Image 1 (cartoon, rainbow, N blue to C red):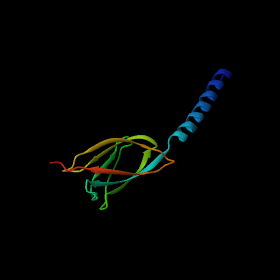
Image 2 (image 1 turned 120 degrees about the vertical axis):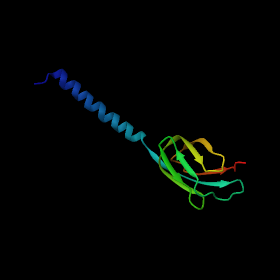
Image 3 (image 1 turned 30 degrees about the vertical axis):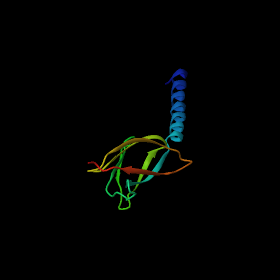
Image 4 (image 1 turned 60 degrees about the vertical axis):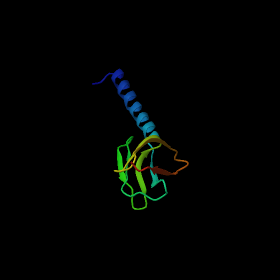
Length: 111
């Protein structure tokens, strides 16, 4: 048999968990980051490794230098771009779901 105090506390915890889950569901929005990687002459770079480190996603560019990364968080994110023989790019970017954009990255060759 439970006392009225225990029933009230359990009810409050259940209500709190439901409100918290609803709030997190509203904040937990994700987006797809699209982009293209080129050299300084505008030529697309294939097989460039793109890591969205904030969410732990990793993809490679296609023959046209294009990439898509799903599940990237709306807001501030960190991106690491690497390819052997090219200067790495370590940058942050902001995703606004109301204004999707194509990220354009230019890599420089190492000497």
